[in-house]
Length: 405
Image (cartoon, rainbow, N blue to C red):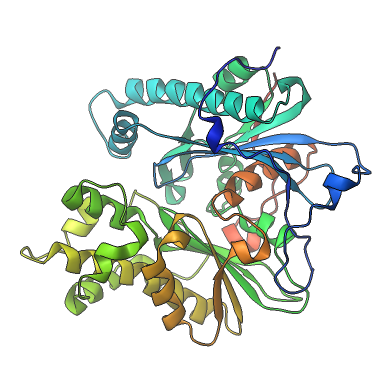
């Protein structure tokens, strides 16, 4: 199939090759560009990774060369969701009229959006679709209920394969759940591959809609789990009161005062006391959950900073309880751009150095998308990519359903 003719915002497509530092390297690693001057010695193995997460903000798309042990990020693209699609996806997280039909239509629309993002990505990188081994597509989570034995990520992978002419690997979570696991988080296996240090105890904290962490103790077992809400409650509260999708740099939150009684009530949620493995999402942490904690009459800014404190406390307490001895904390995801949040988290973890993954030469906004490109590669090669120590599954699993081109 000829490369897609779809063209989006190329200004957001970066075509300068980037390198993820190899596992076990030393201090904060700068991006190396040796391969630009010297041809790579391995045959390229190109994959596309697509990620649209709990924040419902849009699609992260990456082009990655996974032909060696050192993944190379060749290009990236971001395609935001419009408000109509975002509202429909948000509505489908709860029972609603005609939800089966609406879910299928939304999945088809997402497949078209994913295909457009792939077209923009490959067009900006001047790369033919024929060179891509597969697309790893996380899909959009609508329900995540591992306690009932299922999870649902929509996006019609069959239609995506048809539209792009590229094999698609999707539905990464179901196989782990079938083996008794949580099906999430799945990215810790990739963190273990590319961000582990042989002599330093690192924790990788992804602050998307939900907050989750990966514990990488030197010489120890990699673990990870969801901590609680990341940005999703703060974003929803900000949209409701300011009409903005997020609190830029946490400036609005910084104008308020933490409400101790509200914070205590939120921290009493049983999820926080559960031991790992555990995972969560909008099935629990949504506006109905927040409204059930409010008395009424609270200052909106005070609620916002209390939600920020909830995110920071849940992450910090999880690290202190389950990642004892960690000296380096690296943040990624949208929350890593919130200066107020980052400063507060650093204050709660004074024994650790809190930085973003950027200091390691890794763009935290696209780390998850690269991980799903890698998960697609693992699926095509028939290699297990789940970590039972993270998800609680009975055994490692090959993850993903493959839809040939």
